[in-house]
Figure 1 (tube, one colour):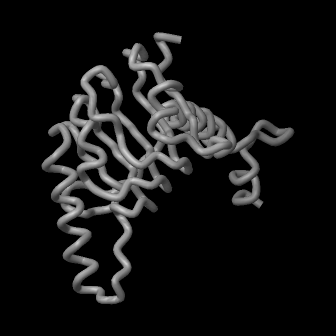
Figure 2 (tube, helix red, strand yellow):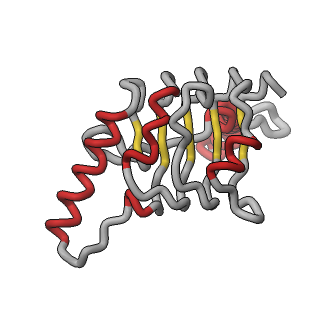
Length: 178
């Protein structure tokens, strides 16, 4: 259990809160890199150096109850955090009805999160520091996708080669001679 790198506790029934989070996710998971806690009732991240994950790179907290940037201050104890998903939390929802105010609030939210958290953070809510959308893929899936792509390329290149007919000539060449 201590060497686990990926943990998903998304959409737990009943939904996880911050107290349960501390009980279910021991900080002894020193190799934990990916943690998905989406679709729960988490209202804050414990601001406690004892609840730190030194290898945590990706944290999904989408659709929880985090209402302010201060509620995630404890993430500063995760020095390798690269990707944070706070989408569908009160802190990241801007719907005042005034597009200009919403844009300003969103910019302030993003700037506050990037200023608060480790410099390793490069993606917040699927966007980089400049607000440009970043396509994120799961690192394990990336490796298997690359292998699949290589296999498809090999199959395609074999299929693309002209196959000889009964006379030993490629079919295309035979048609041209006729």
